[in-house]
Length: 513
Image (cartoon, rainbow, N blue to C red; front, side):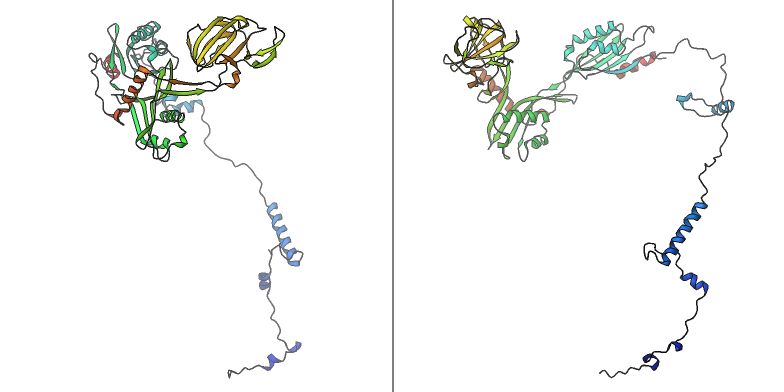
C-alpha cells in the first residue's frame, strides 16, 4: 500500500537440509573453562549436575581451609629484663618522683654534721578554722570540738550569752575562729579571735588583748517593713504571684486561708490578689521572709476578702475584716476510747431494771484524759449523785454537756475552757462497774442523743479587740507594694573597731616560726 517492496532469498524461504547446514566451530579448552561456572547458586536448580558441581567445589574449599589452619599459639613479646634491687635503686635515685612517693631527686646524700635530729615536730603558730553550729548543739561544745579548752569554752559561751541568748543563735550559724600557739603540747590552744553572725541584726567579734578576750557588738541595721505583693490573677494565681516575687510558702499559705472563705475555683482571672508577708532586710544585703500576715482578694476594684491572723484567747486564727473568725464544726469525741453503750433504753448493770440511758459511754483506761467538745464555761465541777465526779459545761445557745464517773477533775466552776482542753480523767466513781466516761448532751436542759448534734465554733472579735484588729489591717494595707525594697541607712557602729579576722591573722604572723 505504501509502494515499498520486500525481497526474500530462497535460502530463507526453503529450509536447508540437515546435510546442507553449516558446521558450528569447535571451542578451545580455554573457552570451555571460561564458560564453566564453578560457584553456582546452590539455592537454584537443586539436584542438577551444575548444582552437584557447586556443592563439590564448596566441600573442597572448606576442606582446604581446615587442612591449612595454623592453630592458635601465644605470641612471644620481647622486652627489657626486670631490674634487680640495686639497679632499681640506682634508677629511682635519678627520677623526679612525686611528693607522695618521697620526692627523691638525684642521688641520696649522706647527712652531714649540720643536720641535727628534731626532738619533736614544730607546730603552727596559729590555726584558722570555721565551725558550724548544728541543730541541738551548744555553743560551748562546738568550741571544745574545735580544740578550745573546756574552761575557756565555757567562759566564752558566758560572754556571748551576755550579748545574745545562746538559744537565739540559729542552727547553721558559721563561727570563724583563730586559735593561737599553745604553751605546751598537752594544753589546748587559746582563742585569739572569734567572729560570727549571732543574730540577723547583730554580729559579734572577739579578740584577745593581753590576757583577756574583748568582745564587740556590731549592730546591723535591719528594715522590717512587710513585703506587699499585688497583681492580677490571670491564668494562674500561683504562677502570677511567683512571677511577682512572692515566696512559694507564702502563696501556699495564702491559698489555704482564701479557700476557707471561698473556693479557689471561684476566683476569676480579672481578680487581684493582695499578699503581705513578714520581711526583713539587713544593711549587709541579706534578707529573710517570714509568715503570711495578710491575705486579700480584690474584685472590681473593691476588697472582696480581707483576712488577718489574730490571737484570741491564746489561740491564733484567721479573722475576716468584720471580726468573724474561722468556723470549726463537727462532733469532737470527749475521749479516745471506744463506745461501750449508746443512747436509749437499756437494763442498768447495777440497779437491774430497764431505764433510759441518757448519754453515751466511752470505755478507756483508768486515768485517760477527757476533753471538752467545744468552748464553754464550767457550771458544775464536783461530786454529783450516781455520776460520781462530774463536770458540766455551758456552751451557750441552750446547749450543755456533762461528763461523769471521773477519777479526777482538772477544772473548776466558773472557768472558761476551750475546745479540746483536758477537763478531767476517766475513772469509776459513782454507779459504775468499771473505768469509763458517761457523756451527756443537753438542749434547753433536756438530755438528747449526743450523736445527733454537731458543734460549730466561730470566734468573734468585739469592742477594743475589734478596734485593734481593724487598726492592724489599716496599718498593713497602708504599705505600698515594693516599699520593703527601698534602701536602708546603716546604724552607728558601737565603739572602736577591733579589726576583722584577716587583720588579726596578719598581726599574729610575726609570731610564726
